[in-house]
Image (cartoon, rainbow, N blue to C red):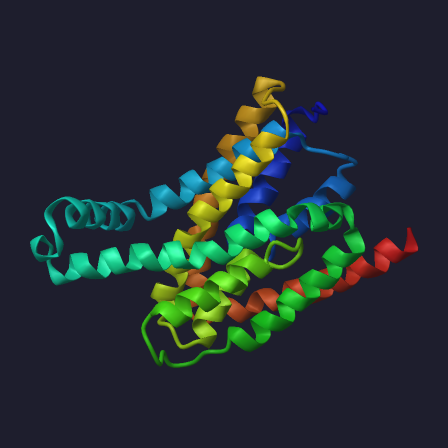
Length: 270
């Protein structure tokens, strides 16, 4: 692993955490950040710990919700359907919706990861994907009244949107939340479902990265990056929720489109 130093590790931790949850694409920004910081690879360990730290941020933010879901699933498995209340039934159903929504990304990630790996060093395609994400947010992020709750069709379509976001520059949170909103899912429900989907998705990606090579490296930069990603990730989740409930989700497009266009232009001039 290339030694990148504490300052660069902190900067990469900030980029990873902010862009993991804000609808601006973490993978896309890491491609750009590595290019700007002159870092060819951040190292397997750095990627693993920063991704894991963002998962921890989600678990802390949704700790009560996750606790209710797991308790309901355990009660359903051990005591039967009649032993849990109506709210517990909804939590069990949500658990299976998360499982269903995770399947497309898992299958596509395993099937295409090697085929698209070159995109993680292609700044031009990343810029194009950032522009595409911005255009999607302009359409999907428009204020609209909820038309339906989260059901099997909505969970599957949102899961497919998450699978497409394997391409660097396409935002996972942008596509999943935006798709949920476009399908008429209530804002808080779309937000929480996107976060719940991120747990197995990010953990799965983290495991794939860990299997690529040995874990190791200088401890201080790794700890600094993980701590930064955890704190900044939690703040980014809160900021995302505020933007969604205030019907400001689409404003991230005003950042993505010009930045993506600038990235494309500059990459072609190099």
